Length: 342
Image (cartoon, rainbow, N blue to C red; front, side, top):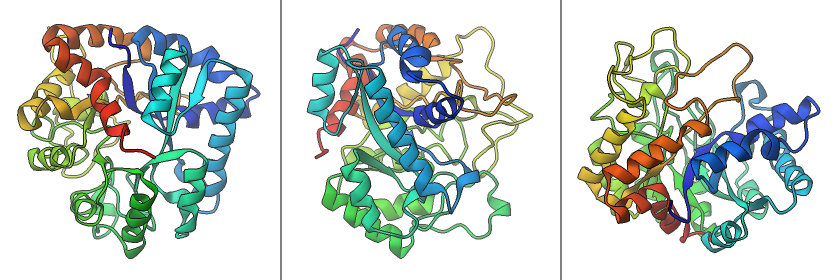
């Protein structure tokens, strides 16, 4: 195993908040840590995702609640968790046997249209900025689940452009996963810092708008960025339910996983394709596991039911790629990108 294995996207804090509202404590330690260790993951980017029920009035409160809950978890599990702001802090945390955690916006809905709040969240530890989830906000249009029901698709607003400039000033990383193609182009036009796609696959292999075209993959690589492999089956395998827009994560008709291959085989295909298009320096993990985060009774069709099931995939990466390339895919490329933080 490499010293550091990074997953660049996990909705951990949404579920921590849900369980803590039920009275649970030490949620990460009790429900997540063993599975993360089984997969070898020791650096995790935690998204601040705000469910639609909190939009717009409660978005700021919910994001702050998630950060507050993480701080409570760190107090309750001393020596196990570390909120990191730089790559060096993450390396130090891993050396000390801690789970290194970064904070990222998955949609800047908590900011509303107040630019000054970005620096406040930066002070609280947020270092990565995904402008939009798959819905419209004050900064940008997302890659909508049902584009024909959402009106005309747009790119960044004037607030979104100002937000990019402020993120650049603060030394933050911008994440284009969930942006539509127009927004993607706007980000590359108006932002000078590191640009990533934390949890997106290849549109050439699975033709949904949440995945990236070869041109987009090459553009991110030219900016020194990386693309995180997403384990959602809808973004791994093409199926009859593919649409021009972003498919439902939870859908009645799901693309089949080809028989006779491991469930994770399609992820290896996407990894190889990114390497072919952009080289081995621009692919990583952004698994987007949703094992607990959905309401009761809802299921997501994902490659990995939990982190405990990720270990065979990590072993397969080490078999399929040369040692140096495998180390980059599993963590080295993300650590290189995180070096740009301050």
